[in-house]
Length: 252
Ligand code: 3PY
Image 1 (cartoon, rainbow, N blue to C red):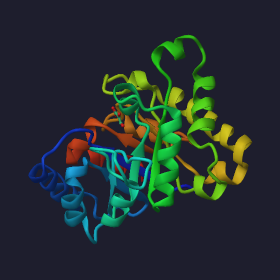
Image 2 (cartoon, rainbow, N blue to C red; image 1 turned 90 degrees about the vertical axis):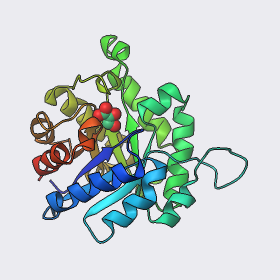
Image 3 (tube, protein in one colour; image 1 turned 90 degrees about the horizontal axis):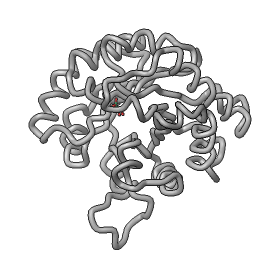
């Protein structure tokens, strides 16, 4: 395809600085020869500086796991997109279902964060996905279309091309349950068709759509073989250098 695969680790709330350093040092030589896949590690804020230093000059890019939508101000405990960009961070995960579920993030705040991230020059990895209940009620496509419309509202086609969309069915996150490759392909294709309608075929064909939700060393190859699955957002398996490398090589 025209799209370069992007495999991004989402470390979630894991790893102290020495642990982060050790993991990335282990990963570096294992993926040094990978050219056709964009390799990203999205790490906790406290690990960003260490991660950037350890991966400087390598093919591993660094991302954050969230950012706030305001530029600065009285938002105790928050981190702005500018603060991340200034460090040299390239990517930021936004709207992960854990943020939506436990930290009351909504499509409205995901939209604001996406705009702030783009304005700061970051590449947002915006997560969408349906709940199990919604899938059972046969409204997966409605839910996904609504998230796409709201999360990217007011964002230009050119800016949208800088974004990655991660399809993460909520029932597959941290549960060990994976969508089948056909289920993943079906929804990723639907996302692309929705983008084609809203933004035109050019944007739809250009944008990277990842699958996320318990992708691991065993199931990655089949998921990544699908036409509309351009990469993965990897939870637990990104915490092990060997598993993460297997997934990256499955995307080549
Ligand atoms: C998972 O694989 O569980 C994820 O949430 C990836 O973001």
